[in-house]
Image (cartoon, rainbow, N blue to C red):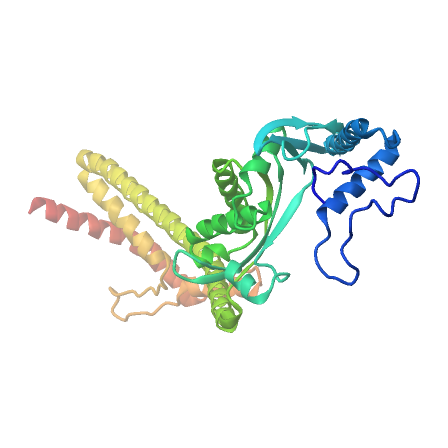
Length: 419
């Protein structure tokens, strides 16, 4: 049937069931696409029945009712399409609205509306939650973990580094906007991949500036590495305008690769033994050196005391000699005799004495008087022994010999002066 047929779009006649006026249908059992004209007539018929039919003579108004039906359907579709622009933003979240892919605005929590797609779109961003990634930890698969964890040090050694990074979106509208539009440049479009790649790059740079012994030295080095990596990551993320703020970096483990772990343990044990021996040597030195210094100081003080004693003794002897010289100038003979007697007294004070009468015709050996006195004092008798005849004689002869000795000394002195 042609579209110019006056019966196009009308239902069956009033006098019969309309079966004779219907256009011929496709024979039953014949395969093929449906008849477009038949579909169009069926649509018009249903719209006419929906808005009422004017009977057989209402052909002019059927077209208007069809237009109204189409308009109503389009209006319903438009309303449904406009309702797709409503969305809800929860507390702690913001929505980034874009118009034709370009940033438009930031909306806060609440029931919001924006123009439906494809005019505008929105993305919900959680700006308060903490996010975390792991690099090189045991939770990752074998090859991927080794690829991330193995890093080269400054002295060309390899270490296995495992660490975690905590981050969140920066506060303010710029943080959410940069997070949506500036952190999707990775191959998979995931911001976590950007943070992971940045963390791995920053850690490799920081570890590459240190030697292996410095990296493995202890907790202080780990804390320093954490701070350096965090600052380096933040600098790199700010340069890319990702809107991400790194809150913490935590190094879980730094150790040599598993394949060389036994050899490294031997090196570590040898280093510990070296430090132990150095400490023992230091302790021994701390014990011996102070004592040696004390002995040296004591010897120096004793030497100083001996020097002072000798100098003062020499000065005293010199002063006494000058005094004796002054007296000798005044009376030489008396001074010489006095010196002689003093010298004899000093000589005979600590020696045993035996008195012999050498001028008599028959020399008599007298007893040692000093020994007798010492023996009597040792016996504790407290009584002087009775002098024997020899002792008495010795006493008399000694008393008589003393003036003769003085006269002889005086004669010798006068002879020397005369000569």
